Image (cartoon, rainbow, N blue to C red; front, side, top):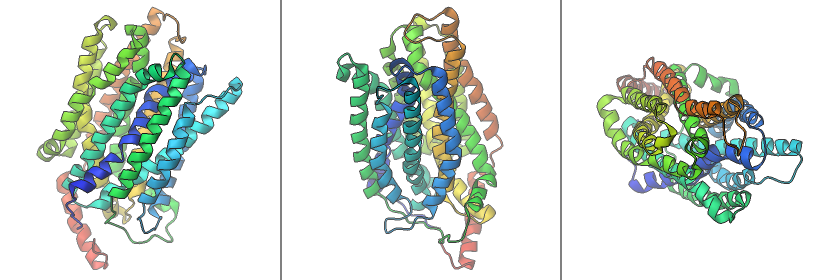
Length: 452
């Protein structure tokens, strides 16, 4: 077994690679819907349809990209070349999202379909190889949890920058022209994306490689997903949990703009999530070692679900209390993102043991798909929900609409979180089971002349 103990320089260099990408991701997740509806003049229903269509495409595209990455062979490894390529292209396409040419209504729809779907494709060509690096760096399950911490911390800071700084920077840099402000912010964030992506590329090394797969078909690789029960359960649970968070992320600016009456407070709301998230991330390796990964994940999801439900009963006039409740939700989120990523990495060896196929990229394509699916489904349902409750941009909303916004921020995320907890109760890949699998795999590899 390749149980390499990695140096801090490599671990943190790898982690920096998540910073710029997540600044962009948070900006897109938190403000693209608003940009489309309130600034580009596109209907909420049309945007919701776009988000769903893009995710239908991703359901095919992401596993295919994982298949391609698994079969890449270069002097830099299987995954790092894709990170380099996607860093450059991703910065360009991210800027294009916040450019709205002077087109007809139909022309605008065509433009956002092209740019948003391209964004999703390039995002996958960065994200899938990036997270696929974890199981190639070491096979030590506890070490993987340690590796996961820096990129998740950087993702947290990236999300904080994108969520907190975007709107104030738009106001300042736009000088009264928010469309121009969004464009300038997108350019600045994309430059950061390039710099941090290059740091991640040059800092890492791939150590664990499977035999070359010359004749395996794409449909064979798909079995890594469909026959991997722990992976499927983890997928369902993480989709539900992140969709719940995406509900709140997409609705936050509407909630504070119309229910509270101060849209700039959304920055305080996003920022409030950070302190306990950071504390929880630092504590998660210790918590998971003591409680086990499965129990730790259930604890994290339950913590967030309860806080979402409580927030429903807080009126808009008590915005400070509402934000304080969100502080508590951050603790559950911090634990969740660390332990869930580590659990995904463990399913790589499960697939190798169960069906004789090791495919990091196919499995981590699921992680990438979770992120994109969750935010897009969350955004799409919010968009359809806004249409259903009678939302009209930039006017005083009716009591019915304000009540609907509150429900989309609280009740619906809580219900989805509850379903996610039920799914993970059936997860069986505990630390004990993983250790037994690794012993058997080591013997199998030796007998086949393929020692890890």
